[in-house]
Length: 307
Image 1: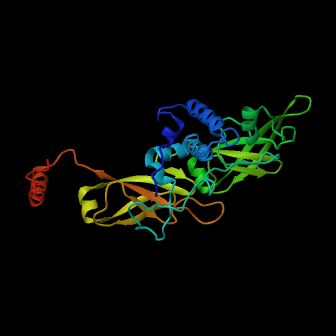
Image 2: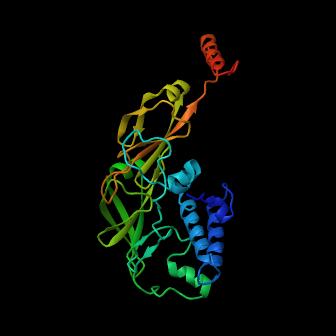
Image 3: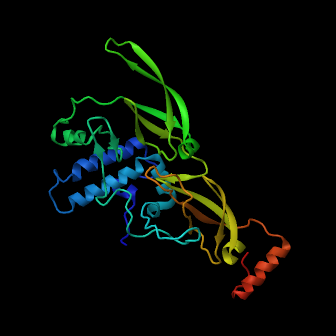
C-alpha cells in the first residue's frame, strides 16, 4: 500500500496549528483545487486529499487519534480473529471516508452528516465562496437544532436526561420547554438524532483513558522487558470492564493488540473493537542482582554490558 502523506503536510500547517489556522488552510486549498475551478489533471485527487486531511484534523477526537496512532488508526483492514491478533491489524480495504474518500450529506430539514465543512454551513456555501452563488435551499425551513453535552461514559453506555429548551416566538418572547431525552448507547461526538420536532447534536467529552474512533477504542499498556520477550497474560481495562489478554512471546514495542468486540456499541448493530498499543517499560534503576542478570544476558548476546 502506498505511503500516505502526512495530514498536516497536506494542509501546510504544523502540529501546533490552531483550529482557526487549520480551517483557514483548508478553505484556501479547497477553493484552489476544487474541480470546477482547477481543470488540470490531478486537481480532483488533491481536493479529495485536502478534504480527507481536514475531516480528521478538524475533529478533536480524530485529531487526537491521528496524533497518537497516525494513519494506522484510519486504514484498518480489520482481519478476522479475536483477542490475540497482533502486530499491525490494519491493511488495505478500509476507508473511513467511504469509497469516494470524502462524503457530505445535507437536507433542507437540517439533517447533516459527514465532516465539518470548514465554516461552510452547507455544501452550497462553498460554491458561493467560489462562484458568488447562493445556496438554492437557503429559503427552506429548517428543523430547530440544539446541542447536548454528555460525558464519555454516558455516550458509551447510554443515559436518560432532562433538558430545557429555549426558543423565541414570533413576538420575540422567550419560551422554555423541558424534554426527557433517552440517549442510546454508542452515540459519538457530532451524532445528530431527531427527538420529536427538534434535532439534537451530541457533544461528547473526551476521556483520559481511552481514545475513540467510531465504534473502536484505543488505549495503551506498558509492559516489562520479560513480558514482551517471554509472553504473558495481562489485564486490560476496556469500556465494558477488565479483560484478560494473552501477549505472545516476542511482541514488539508499538504493536497493536486487537480485542475483538470490546469496543463501543455500534448504532447500526454489533460492537467495535478495542486496540491496545504496547509500550515498553524500561527500568530506571536495577538492584545488584538484576544488573548481574542483565549483564549475563548481554554476554550471551555477544555484548559485555547492557547498562
